[in-house]
Length: 507
Image (cartoon, rainbow, N blue to C red; front, side, top):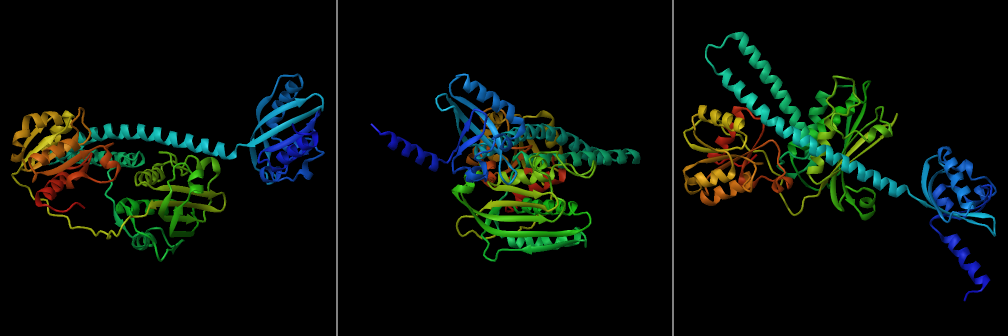
């Protein structure tokens, strides 16, 4: 059994070492005791608070609710649990979760408050992540279905444009239809980039070299009023990334920076080697511990308010005037970085400028940087092609396009039908053209694998509005296949067929 002095000594040590905020007030709310943790949590020392009413330290909107809790405690309604926000000495708001009791013998209130800042930040990050994921799923589904529709429109435009004797006004109309459909196709590609359902071709990439080449282009296109500076790490690691998409992201961020500096300013492009430790990962739920190559684009423009920063990666959100931006630029960059297993952060302050930092995983091993391969000529041939597509209109348009190119074409409506009808005779075909996402157990990927087992020399061309296939999530195309992203034009189809027939390495 502890003596009274021992009990008081232990209580004092708990009071002095507590990481939570402990307050003791009289019945009127005047602070009698304040734990030393007030310095860490609120920035005020105990001496700055003792003897004063607790009301001035509270957010006014929470004051009446707190008084109600104190009255209920004095009425004998057990231990009270409630939230009340306090002001930090630097002016920011600190959310606190309180447990309070009233001691009738002492005529004192005893409060223990836990700082909820980190928890609320984590919950906000989780809500934002869930919202972005839900929007991405919806966006990807819409883009996929819309691409099938555009595929049919563009195929028919191509077919009609080849008709002999077509009146000149009709050709103008067709050109307008084709142009509008192509712009719609570009829009759906942007949506797919955001929803992380585009197929990537990652290669080992020297980001410094990429920045050097792109900076020369930016100097010509951004205008003389923009000063472009680079700060590149001399020992930069290699990253495994889709080079074309990274170049597009850098250009996109640079154009946004230019637009934020309408009267001119300074744009800085930086690279660095960065390691995410446990502390950073704990504060950023979507980050993964490890080594990263950072690419950052900063400007000294007008900056953005905090409420805008929460929305900048959402599709169709833009701070530009109507007609001056689709609102898909940053969302495309966000989706691309996430699909590349990377991380993205944006920092901005009104009147000071904005910085966007892209983090891409460090490449493992001694991979060599890839170089571009030449594109073969698009020569027609009489080879046999099997087309597998569950959408009847899309299948019909692809078959018609291939037939006009001079190929002998067979078709099937599903992977299972293709294996049933042509499984034993797959060697007769030179190329398999198949959609990736199809109903049933045999999707495009499985069909391609089965076709290669039966006919090892068969060429594979995969079509996709988008793909949730695990292989695509890893950023690689199976079986040295070519990918045609719907909607595509006949020239794209012809080129892909020739590439697999001529054995040209995948770009």
